[in-house]
Image 1 (cartoon, one colour):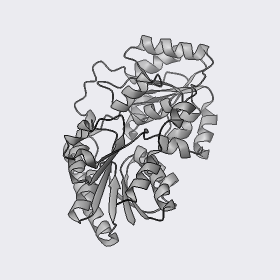
Image 2 (cartoon, rainbow, N blue to C red):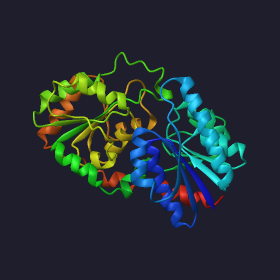
Image 3 (cartoon, rainbow, N blue to C red):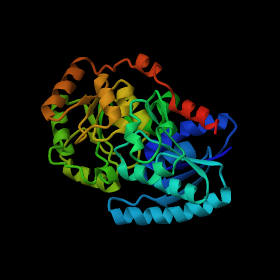
Image 4 (cartoon, one colour):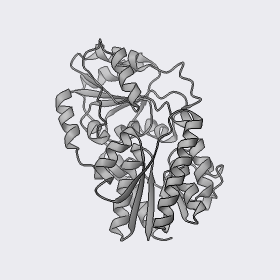
Length: 354
């Protein structure tokens, strides 16, 4: 089969690289389209550009709803021309509204993958147009049927999405050079994805601010380096300005390879989902300060003791101080990981049944 994969985000680049590898091994023809975005571009160059037949198509629309809509419309026009020419047998995306609409309009079967039922906009615009949905087993089917898909079309794999790239990961040489420049030990702060549609109505009033967090971390261990990974270019400048008096801070100008950076860190404090989940599965001290209700996958990892939910600086200080006193040792998560199914293998195997 000729299979079209549409990629929108950094997480999806890592995730679909593993799936594309598995599909190629089974003899399928792979076509990948990628939306331009700062961090996605960097991962595209590393994982996609020279390994699969691909197109860079469209841009991220930013925070404003009108700009998101116009960017999507323009991208769909470009995708339509490409996909009409390529004529794949099926399309697969992480609930990409662009891919779902183009596939549907051209009479191509579309398959959705998602672990984020809280992403209502993307789910509403893609899942009703999909013949199948792949999702982790911990997310109840009832969370998905509200978007217009029947339960028998929902395929659940017994694993979490970062298993795909953790299993296949090899250290990135450029990121290793930056790590050597930063020095050890270091902890990562991953700020919130404030431009995402599902964050537009978020109440940030009780959220622990990054500036306050950094100042508190700086007091715990004078040897501890703090790496801040902003998602957006404008945030790099803002954080550098607000934290210029603080020592041991590193804010990279260029995107780094997240799995490599997490692997060699002593922990991560996350305002989002993917890197927090990734860090927890890798056995790092992982703290979520994400505002509001936590995603289902983080609730699961919190219950398993792999992620800690903190709402105050005092709680964070206590955890990090104990971690320092224990020599920044990682948790052994080998058994936890061994019990999980590789989503890439599962998806590739079951797509072949279409």
